[in-house]
Length: 414
Ligand code: NIG
Ligand code: FE
Figure 1 (tube, helix red, strand yellow):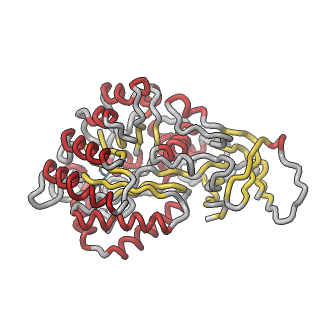
Figure 2 (spheres, protein in one colour; figure 1 turned 60 degrees about the horizontal axis):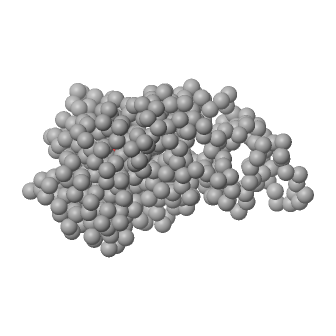
Figure 3 (cartoon, protein in one colour; figure 1 turned 90 degrees about the vertical axis):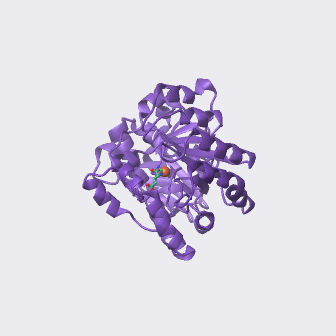
């Protein structure tokens, strides 16, 4: 396939960087008036129209005119809870009637609600329903995804979730990364945050590792969930097992979790709706951290909580990723385009910054940079084609519409 007259080819590199920090994000490449060649499901080459290849053999060549359209790498969604048993729209109703997300959780709802339902649902049914959700996300342009456990909250149910994630990984042609969300909420029964974390570190984590079911561990570092002590126990145990961490932190309260995560070399800190100067300091690249920030504006939008101060992170030269946080409680949407739109409209990200955060940096936030997040020769042709657009600001400006017209995975239209 040869695509010509592309209005703007976004995120195309000969040799892509592994991540973009701070001001580099606004310089995500935009090649105007370009062509792109796709062969056997892979990106073959690209260039400006002035170098449009003189074609010798036209047989079997499909030339597509992309006049007015942009071509982008497909979305890389580095934070989801896509495996769950049931929606929680009744909790949403309670919120409309005046309760807060935290009040609902304190009354035994929230994550505990999802866990009760998940423990009861057979593995095959959970898998089938999650697969439908995953395919839906792919149709909307997601070309790489991370999926967490964390609604099991007992050994067997957590392992069940991780096996389902493994089956999902095998069922789809896009990269899937698996996260053991070991400390999501304190399980019902006689557990405390401390005893559950110790149990995870000593018993469950070794089982997860023995079955090779996870790429990362995760914890919800938050008041009423898991504190610094527990998060550090988990991350240290995981590190001994060779697993890096992606951590839910600073969603409602800041109490030193970010610094703990950067000190323990977490790959990402996610949420950061609350961000104190010491958190920012810990994340500054000058402090030599590899830890990236991951903003989840769908959660802010849906819960009506503050948005992650992304402009401050960018000013501090931090690498920022954007993800959906797709889950039934705080962000029931898997649509990455909507996330980019919120990032532009609500967090004042420039279109190219938001797109870089949702593609190249999203890939970095789950270590699939060698497979996804950019358009580069030899890579899988996982790309999006937009509708005719005035400019990339249309991702924010046309807020009632989808700007994506076609989605390709391995060069095949989805
Ligand atoms: O990222 N904050 C913790 N975990 C999820 C929400 C979990 C839920 O409400 O089911 C999140 O927002
Ligand atoms: Fe989450």
